Length: 164
Image (cartoon, rainbow, N blue to C red; front, top):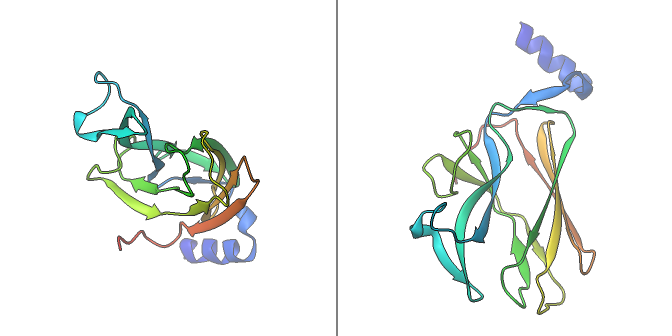
């Protein structure tokens, strides 16, 4: 009865929920300069002439973390290649608190929003991303610093995750 009453109250006024405990760790696939002391050699790749560690799970929020409704988390990412015409934000979830790599057994791809660039360039291209957590959805806004182009996406957190 309590669950039913809570669902009805939330349906009428979502502001009743002040915070959420995250069921998963959420992160994005990224790469960093390769360091033998830190990274597994199987993730070594060469990007534009530089040795990098790929498939790193870069945590946005941790499993079991209490997140206030509407919490905004900002990150910046850059393109690893010259003349890149798009950038995928591969967002993963994990049952582990702090997974190392997105190909760990506990990780699953949640979504892959993409920002496309109308013009390519020689320089590193930066994209500013804002994640909004703590509601029934994750909100994502990504902005290309060069052009100002923006993408927006939302992903439901209520439905159980299903691997497709």
